Amino acid sequence: KQEVTQIPAALSVPEGENLVLNCSFTDSAIYNLQWFRQDPGKGLTSLLLIQSSQREQTSGRLNASLDKSSGRSTLYIAASQPGDSATYLCAVRDSGGSNYKLTFGKGTLLTVNP
Amino acid sequence: GAGVSQSPSNKVTEKGKDVELRCDPISGHTALYWYRQRLGQGLEFLIYFQGNSAPDKSGLPSDRFSAERTGESVSTLTIQRTQQEDSAVYLCASSLGHTGELFFGEGSRLTVL
Image (tube, rainbow over all chains, first blue to last red; front, side, top):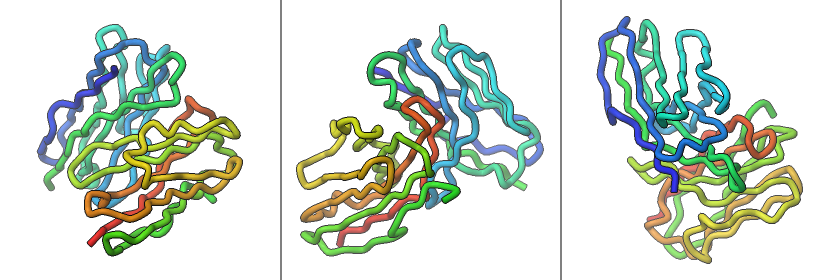
């Protein structure tokens, strides 16, 4: 059974700092991996989707990498801003018959201090 | 619409009452998911619909929970005889195909008194 772990559970940084959020998964047979952010009381907003054949994806100040063989993905946020404060979740979609299902991590709560 | 739409955004009900939550997916998205998120907890898979295929109901926590979807349109999640433990945010998501990027609605916050 796939398990997804996100470390750290919470992170507080000063504005302007570059930071890395980590996501690890136990079964490397994945189809794709998706990063989301969730603001308090809101739904999840998709940030980046990485297919299993890709090594990284970039969107603005965000860069997500995928090392499937080691079961790890990182989300790099450059020049962090207070508006980046949110919970960041990663979700893994397994390959195989039930590849419509995603397994979510519990998230990393990021606080960017002005 | 442009995104996944859910209603109501907030629902307060008394224990024992039935509630119905609605999800309107992105137009053209064949796959639709319901998740539950209890306060401070992760996402819990409830049910998955894909086109006209039989849904995967394996995540529904009890027979008080049911969901319907007509074709590739609106879905409703019904909770009968609500309990306090049902209090949570119910999130709906849709994707283009069963392996595509997932897009979420804003959720329906259910409070059972």
